[in-house]
Image 1 (cartoon, rainbow, N blue to C red):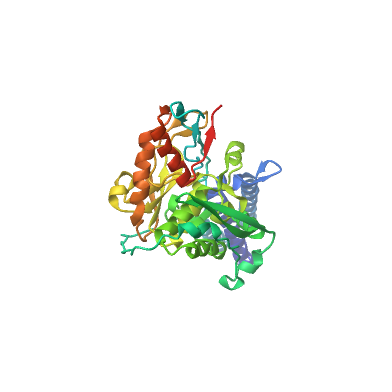
Image 2 (cartoon, one colour):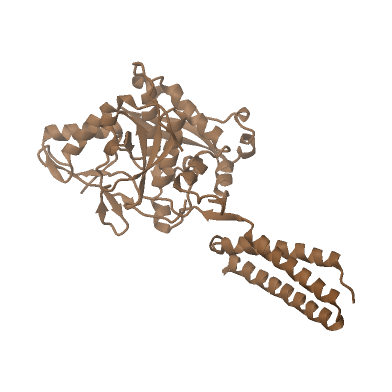
Length: 441
């Protein structure tokens, strides 16, 4: 028998590699167990295999020590064993102290609901009542920067709303806009995105691609980070969705088309807001528990989304239009809405940002709607939301128009008989903003 240090050192490298994998699995066990192999947790299976490998290696090493010591009764034999043991111990401690990537699953995405849908009972002007509609609010577990903004002046511009109905341009993606674009130009379909601007209904036909949507759906919803770094926050997950470079040329073409409709910057924001509000709410996904968190482009392709998903799409579009944007996250109510920078006197709870409901047609700044939580009970947005800042940018200066309309809308209320004059005000606002209503039999 003889002591082969070449084999000993090779064994140390092998056990070091095994220990690194072991450390990674232990620290990501929860995330790995979310994967399944024939209903068995992948993380636990891998951990069990590695523990067996490590124990086998320790057993063989100790067995070799005893064999060597029994066959050689010299001082050199003991020295070799001591040196080998110290090296192995150093490999164990050093390897297990090396930082490994941590998988953080996005499991705190918010999924509530459309803004209130008002219902009216048909009848004469002295027997008209407005009844609060239903919003379904739910919550789906998915865990999921920003300096002082500067205002810029805005000149008065003509309002071209009267000729918007005649505009209809199909949006397509040019290959030159991204090295990624041509790869995903498969399974095309044309979607007519509807919007309402001061009572004028119009639409933007847009070519969207299943190849891009399928690619985004296959992307991981987690963020990897080292134990030396801070754990990713909600804003990290939101920015991960917004800053995806592969979807950018596809969505930017739609934003460009909005800019081509009118040169009035604030009207561009109004069109973007109405367009997103008129995308369907994904009630089926919420009720079936199939929500996984869509990228903004997926919302455009599938034509539906929950509050967090539609809010991200709207935040993206307003950011590209040059506005300061935040997402209002209502933790208690499990709801996301968008905030657009605006004059302070019109802002939501003195935040400096006007409230924008993304889930269904609603007046900008109106935040007093009823929301239906799971179980059909209703609630309002009463808590102070977390303000997740997306970007700096321009202010939505002309929001006084919407603010005054929202005050009128709120004063009319719901669930009461309206006289003819009040009803006409109500109906005028419904038509101006395309608010969806349902008749009550």
